[in-house]
Length: 485
Image (cartoon, rainbow, N blue to C red; front, side):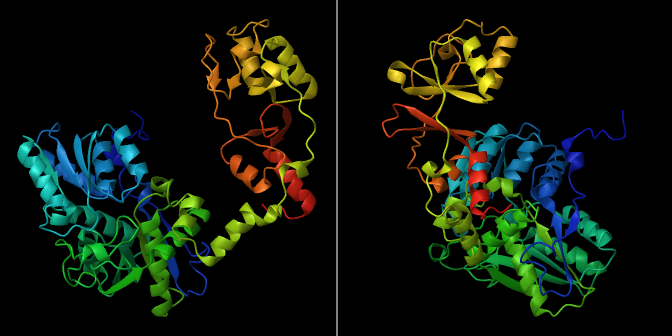
């Protein structure tokens, strides 16, 4: 077997890159030293929890626990994803704030038993994940409860490996490590391992504003809410040993999410907890008056791809007031101001050329070829727009003898109407958005985020008046001299 071939997913865990973040917008400006990001989201399961899962699986095997034994796993979801990736059967206990992206991924991995738990439930309360997990284990024969927070698993070797990677990648020169704190395991073990070899290193713990870990107290969880996942607690976790953290920095949700978006824009596809840690690293670097040769490493624990409905959604970020002032201004410019209240009528589109649903496939292809069209609107009774046909699809259907040249277009078109399908295999329904000459270009731009072509009709959708593409928008902006790449 080739030396390039790795036999198991488990063997790919670890050895993640360490990269400079100093050129990311909002990170390195005004900082004397260098801020480095440890890209733990580049593990195969897209989070640092892959390392933890690998060692837990090894300990389960050493204890003689069957690989088929169901694992009752508590946590925000990354550990569960990692364990499921390694082939374990799971019952997941997820906080209410866990993103739907993680839930969908867990389901795709075959996890069907998912129990939502109360955000911020205190230890010992019936709603706490630990209590729920113990009740499940009691009634599920052969199951095993997995919860990092309890410190029941020896994760020292796991984080020794990560500490050694950091030291090696920094050539033994590392002034501070900044990491988000949740269960306390990473902070405890990395602090121990790094300080054994670098006694002067500073360990900076990061938590959301309103979290109580750094206070080492128990507080009212209902009064302490935050959106950032994977970091923060309403109480100090048992696994966090006193003295492991030299400095605590609290970061607001807005700062965390805005920095995460800046990381994404800079090519670093990390999630909100990483945004909080990088923002805290910058705060530390500024306050510590670093030297030009100083190095600060940051753990980037999971991927932005876990947050398509939240971090990566402009609408969600705006609705929750999580973008900083400059980002809001940039978004307003790109979504609204650059179009200056213009509508589709200002695009000066040529009149639409259409085909009827009873026209032949041969005729439709010939029409598109003659006019150099990529698609053509299809009309039904009374010339009402009912769908469209693309040139590439039509040619493929004809070349593969799925469609005959004499077959009607309506048999293979993409329909807007929720009409019953015909027997043709390619005939499908397409959601219809009403787009008229009065539709603002800002709205059309949002339409093109998920569609390639817009069919412009009158308000009653009786007649197709024109066809617009993103290229028409680009040309319009170029004419106005406001277009920017």
